[in-house]
Image (cartoon, rainbow, N blue to C red; front, side, top):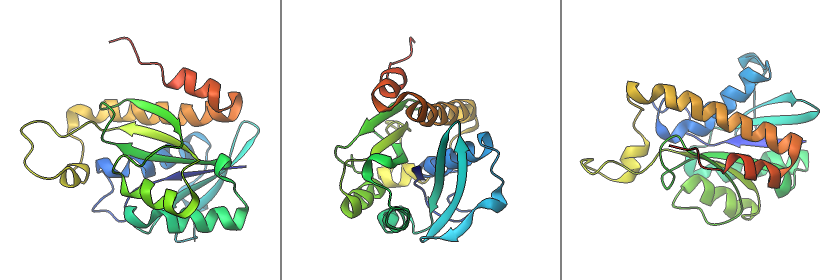
Length: 193
């Protein structure tokens, strides 16, 4: 069994923001695994549903604690289901990756992402991450990067966002079918531009 936790902020105000790509990846996995919205239950300070991907049983979790407290929800689910860090995959937005890039990573620092910081503080850093690239704010952006991540994607980027989410779901599928190392080799290859 794997727990897939997608990080984001609850509520309609944040739904379409860059910071909610983790939630959107959970939605994409639920769609691909034919899990209806009604299957998600309020538990562990989040919304959780069971899914099956090939032979692997998945738990899909959207913490409802706000990004900075994500570890509270993820830890509660891991404790209840006896999930080890090696069985946890956390999906999150990543400022330090070019827009629409997807990378798998195990362990490491939080890169300034407070949701990752919270999960690592609760469980240690040795879990798998699906990093969904949002890129850095453009040079003409006025404000803090925190303001940038709480903005939506312009319409010109929507198709790329959908492709990124499909690639993120593929990363989960590859981890379940091939294992982490082979999945990383496939997903982390940069596309020819």
